[in-house]
Image 1 (spheres, one colour):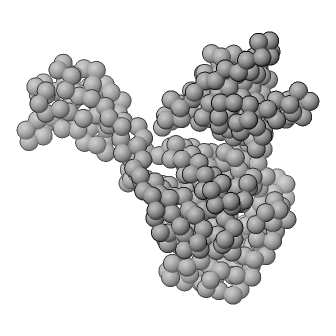
Image 2 (image 1 turned 90 degrees about the vertical axis):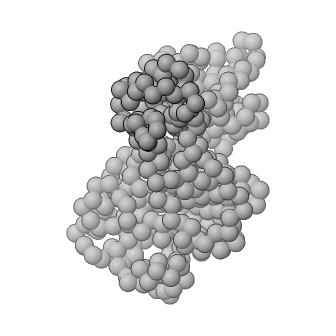
Length: 112
Length: 292
């Protein structure tokens, strides 16, 4: 399974970024290979408009099985993400990636 | 760290006056962030001493290199925003009209036109007169706003809170429900709604609550000028009850509110009565999020 996080940093101890559209990084964990892949999202952060849909597009291209984020995507981005075969978990801000992943495994995260 | 975002939906309900009053009562414990960057006014009440000032760039602006321009007029023909006209010597771009779309750059036969990052405001890191750190910004007149500047103010406020070991960020948000409001909500712990008993006050409050529901945010409500229209005030109370929004307090119409503003002070500094009311409101918020 491949799990994507909106992240303020690039490692397991980074905090989940509460923002969806303007998240600093998208970090992808591949459970099969046990590898973290880091995608810099600063290009989207610098956009004046349309950050939510631009990040949704990137998620679409990465096509993870699960997305773990903070406050969650807004309406427009959510409409696009619904078309993906992907579960979305929210309210994981104030957690590190590691903590959020553990909570996800223990089914303690809130599904959107 | 907790973030309290003060919002109103409708403008002019007393949102900034309330935020500043909370800021004075929480002096020594908070970081203040003015995220109403279109019409920033928190600095009028907080009289901050600015330590760091930097230009904020957003979007793009076309520029003509006079050396390379051959005055063919193709740029004027294609501009959808009526931003390019023949000037005294050659074609000129009117910056307030230019949307930075880049069509002129594409059609220019001599590559005389290029797009540059547009300076659209200023960003500040300061100390408020309460002694608390403050992050704020000012968008230029007519400049294109976005959640981008608000995101920057909030990011700086978080850094300040970490640096100064404050566990509370007090955010003055923008009116409405658009991009700057949504951006100010990221990472929010609690939302304080300041409304007034008028048809538009309630209407705009309803729209805002719809947005808050989408992000599953908890909110409490303050009715300002609560006694000017008892029917509307009661409609607001009913709406809040139905939406599971706590009533944090009601502030009656008071000329002291305006008097405080004229002096550049907050309502808790000029009126004993309003001070007591705000203290009670702080206690209500405290019960909700256990921080102030």
